[in-house]
Image (cartoon, rainbow, N blue to C red; front, side, top):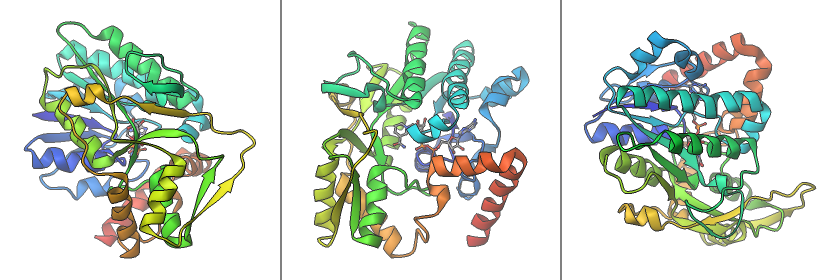
Length: 346
Ligand SMILES: NC(=O)c1ccc[n+]([C@@H]2O[C@H](COP(=O)([O-])OP(=O)(O)OC[C@H]3O[C@@H](n4cnc5c(N)ncnc54)[C@H](O)[C@@H]3O)[C@@H](O)[C@H]2O)c1
């Protein structure tokens, strides 16, 4: 199949695209390149890379036509992709996360192109009991609201001839060619390794559903390759844990690791664990548990494969803040510089 992956140079996309290539699919990606795109350029067979802002492409009929020409499926990952970065500029979040999703979905439906959307379990916000797809959402942040709005719009667009898939993913972890160290298990992986400690904000009793990035990629492939998927909205998660449970896992990996509890003036209210009954009905079975995913990152740090886990560009909010403070012209040259550094390393 011909598959367009938006945001393909990101943490999830960089794991998904090689898996699509291995399965014989042709991949085009549209990505603004906030975190560079050179790692995608290195992939074989070659990926067609369109480095542009999705908002600019969708505002232009001809560019939209060219973007979707020949595509069977669109996997839509491009987003301002966590709570703190979404709060930096809520209007940008609305435009990229909701309006671009809406416009891209409408363009796909008009062309008979299938559409798979990367939503998030964070739509459940604070939920008592197991959150299921047909239950209430409770978005507590601009990011979560942008996902709820997108989910609802996609549902309203669905009909007998055009059935999107909405994957509500748990919090991801694990190694990616474009790493993120602003996800709790990835952060714990480097802190427990470099400092023998992990910082727990609040009492650590908050529940979260977790999912390895490669398992998430496999779930997208399942929906891409099965047009007759059973469900339109599906939670995708592997293990539900409280943050204190994660501490125990990290102490098993590194017995010297200690938790440091940090009191918060404005505690994080998000607290949800999710049902994966629908995911099971789809026949999706995640395989990489939290401990194995953490060990994979830790090995990458210890062996120098990830040389500088504290670098700012592994943290979406800090990096996007730096880019916006530099202004758009310097921002582009800075991203270009990152790409040059990446090619020099190869
Ligand atoms: N990482 C997680 O834990 C997680 C969990 C649930 C859902 N998700 C969702 O999955 C998707 C991918 O997440 P990720 O972790 O890979 O995030 P990421 O930030 O690593 O990747 C997002 C990509 O989108 C691109 N992008 C941002 N704005 C763009 C624009 N205006 N035009 C074109 N490209 C743009 C960025 O350059 C980046 O490469 C997102 O939609 C995110 O909300 C992620």
